[in-house]
Length: 349
Image (cartoon, rainbow, N blue to C red):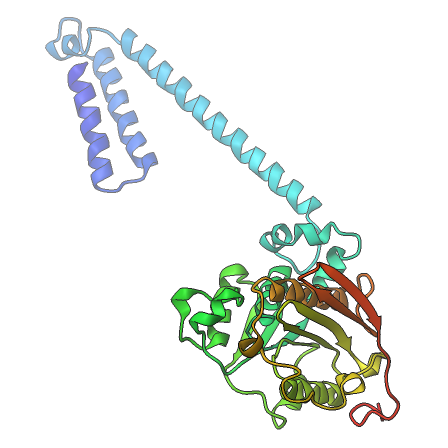
């Protein structure tokens, strides 16, 4: 019997070396087993070969029966598992929400979809939306990250600056390892790491009055996180010209503000509130006046939330209202704002 077991092991090992299928190896072992039984039955009693195989077929029949039971049990177990998998797959197919989302996306956005104000329809609007962010700095950072996490289908960002060490105190979309890289490409890396389902369009250039209207025309919503009055005025004029809602934020030191400029929707534009640039020194930049690092996170998150609400139709947005935030005293105020009929930018809208 030992000789047969050694031969069986040799056949199995040769099959592995030749990369033969398991079925072929089992068939060879079955042929060996049949040959052994034939020899035990055909050879007369006392024959040396028969005696070396155990003298009779009894032990071999028991061994064959045990192997058959094991194989039958294994086959039955595999069939039960396959059936369980099919039943589970059919159950998931029957219970999975219909729509344009993959199973991965459904799990990713599950906390949105269960919200009554968003649901599957709102999440679909987010996926179909195109949002352009002006600036990949302090305000643009949380806006880009939260809109990407929320599943906004297409995100664009325009900025001609590069990442510097002084940015990292507040511009959380960038990292120390991406120093000196253009901010739009640094932001692209962060967004793709966060949500690969978002299409990202980086514009590594300065926004100008010449390109702004055409660029804005490709998007549904504009979010302005720029830090100079001249850029904000240009963004406002282009948004009015193209009829795009504009979510605008501004910060300095400990204070920030957020509103939605949208003359087409009954809200004022920026020129209605600020028709002229402030006098020199009255509105210093963050580099000149300083800014607490967490402030753009708070104001930028509010801007992202307003964008999500604007896209999904949830809640009441800041259209016709400006939210003022004082971080030093943890004080928030809402101020009603209105259009000016004589506004030089939106007066004819």
